[in-house]
Length: 251
Image 1 (cartoon, rainbow, N blue to C red):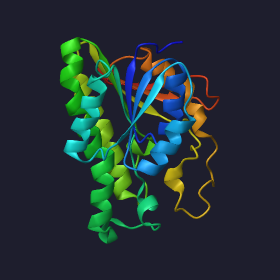
Image 2: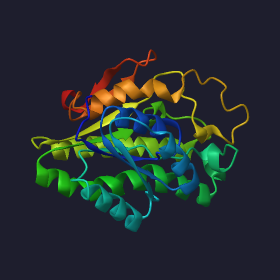
Image 3: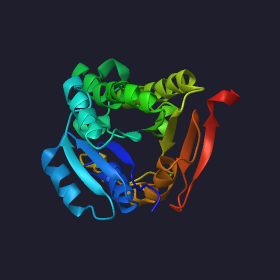
Image 4: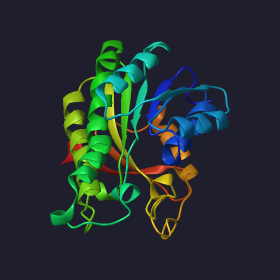
């Protein structure tokens, strides 16, 4: 097992990619702090997780500073997080079921998406960094998407949040250079992954070619120490590995 004695925080762990990662990490021996805002779905998810490690459910809103501090505090009870996976995210279609041009975007929608996808990424990272730096070991993996590199019509809240997460990773990687802590980005393979984020979209599986399990092996590899600070990695469609698509220190 590749992750024995590792403590890993996974946000957005109740379904989709987060649930798949948690399953994979526990099977490899990790203690996984599974954070999610949805208590009912989180409990269902954790009940399904089996393996050599352990899954600890924590109900938390990553956009809420107090919730994030509690999430990190629980990880400290197990020795502190070795890996943080910033996975929690919402797509605007999940919340509203409609697309909006920039001139039409409701402020409530904008705030909800940015609060989870970008503010949550920042809050979790800020909270876990002191412990990682103090222990001289740690890895932060930001799960983004292809929309973090290109725009899409009528998706400004979601696209902006993913561009922001990519920029946050770049800045963090520069700050962590010459430290024992790494910042990496991971994106699912091209073709789309079927997740519960699409629950409110008409024909949610349209053009979605992969099940969430496709990201388990590459994420286990990255969590175990493969990859490097400043790297951007994309899963392969065969579910076996990943490829480096960008490296900030070569730009």
